Amino acid sequence: MGTLDGKVAIVTGSGRGIGRAVALKLASQGAKVVVNDLDPAPADEVIAEIRQLGSDAIACCGNVADADFGNRCVKTALDTFGRIDIIVNNAGFTWDNVIQKMSDEQWDAIIDCHLKAPFLLLRAAFPYFREASQAEAQSGEEVFRKVINISSIGGTQGNVGQVNYSAAKAGVVGLTKTLAKEWGRMKVNVNCVAFAAIETRLTQLVAPGEVKTVNVEGREIRVGVPADKAAAAAAQIPMGRMGTIEEAAGSIYLFCIPESNYVTGQTLICGGGRGGF
Image 1 (cartoon, helix red, strand yellow):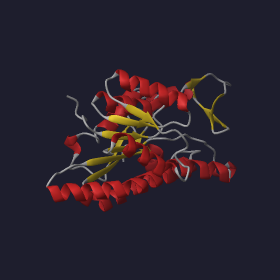
Image 2 (cartoon, helix red, strand yellow):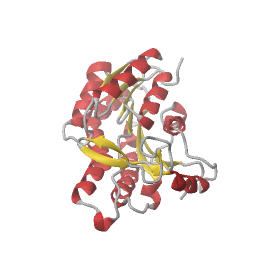
Image 3 (cartoon, helix red, strand yellow):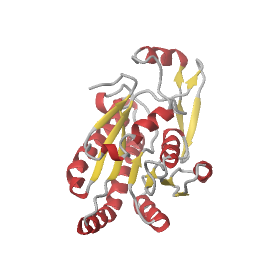
Image 4 (tube, helix red, strand yellow):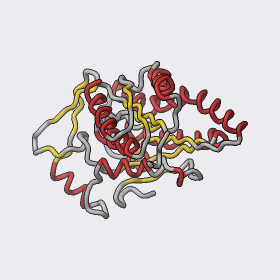
């Protein structure tokens, strides 16, 4: 028996990295998962892994910032599994520059992905949450649902070269606190996890002069951290290293389980001791 048996989770950006680890963690505890990625191939790979764990999953691919994505994703979950219990707004990427060199496109792309996309998905989920909570109240049943938004210590403290990302992630904290107040009556817990340094393809080590990029809808986005800077960053972490994607997923899982039913509106920093308020 898993702690999430019978639950259905939507996890955006779950074809790779932290999102993949979250999808597998929730599935390992019995949840069925709606997997999202820009590309079908990595989503299909995660679905296969979830089925090997004995659970089930379906893909809803595409850009989370598209105007129709929220409604499409909610419909996919309800048409396939008949319910939604957990939403993890994880999808994201970074596109850095100092403010005087940052283009409108850079600003808009990051704000849309990290802040507007969670808004669109959660707005689309509201009618289901309201109807389900009303039906449960009438029957005397108490069911808690979970929303976990992903922020960053860039959003809680700022970070040089990330005015777009930091602004979006600060907005996620405000979104979380407000929805916790608006949705508490529906027994929806809305919490936030803010990451510090986690090992992903965005933070992979690069050699001096080496350039690595990932393609995000036709944009070549530079990724990676020079090895010397990574070592200096690790030295600032009390635990002495970056976190793993499995550890990141674990911090999100804490907000998904029944033991957190009376916790809402909170921001948990997952940073090995770095990034506290």
